[in-house]
Length: 385
Image 1 (cartoon, helix red, strand yellow):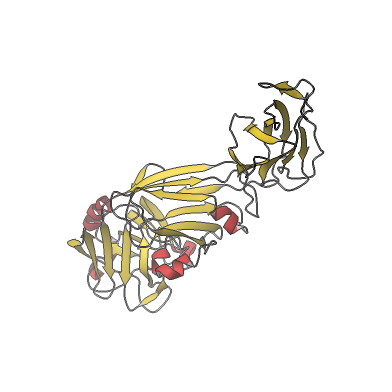
Image 2 (cartoon, one colour):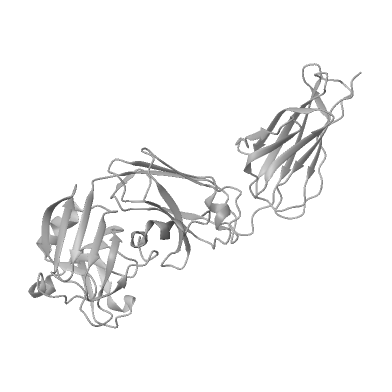
């Protein structure tokens, strides 16, 4: 009688020390399985979670390996050259129970099957994410795919490897890591140039079981969005004019008043992206470090930066529209122009702002300022460069 296979299974999947576990009940007969075949022995290795499940066989080869979590999810894997090793493509996640079924085969074709199970401890800290833009939305040509992390990400390369972006037209782009205005870590995927209208974008973030360095991910994320019209808003603070370009053609010009020169009330320059259309909101100067200069409800508010630069209706500044910059940093216009402009712009439209009297260029994390970097500068912010 041929010698039965003895397979050693290494499950690299614990957060803390785990005791070794034996297979539960020996072999169950496969086709031609020997009744006296030895059970597959299973060992939970004393290492950190976030590693692939690995299986090895001695005295024969692996015919089939199945690793299933408590919710029926399957950890797919690949058998190595020679058929004596197998490793899961995904990592074992914290706080998860797994069942392992291994069918091994002797040199003369006899098979035996063994089953075992193990559980990984719960994560001490769980990292979660906020995705933008929202799922199934349509956005302007400058909106990046943006991920803000609740907890610090010190293992940026490990996280970035799990992020897969697919576009309907093969758009060239790159991840870049920035510090969000909130102080949290953020990863944005920006195309080399503005998106082409109609592009469909999907994200597969296979993060479950990945250690960010500041906490574990315990789920995957999926999202997708579509790019809308090719619309660019150009703001010239020197001539006090805002021009809307659609498909490369100017379709409208609006007289505006920007930030007051000579101090903290100056506007930002560079490319800012319309982050949100917030309607009527209360604006309080104390929240942006300008003392008690104003506290009022403002209509047709369109957020351009986290630091508080908006485009909005500013009827109190009517004498200055098209003539002078006299705002507290925002781009103001009449009620009538603001209403129609608000209706025509889209979240994700770029605002290309220029002017001599500004306080600097919009930073990458102050809204979506990635467009103020060259393509090479942006690619250098990838953790996988």
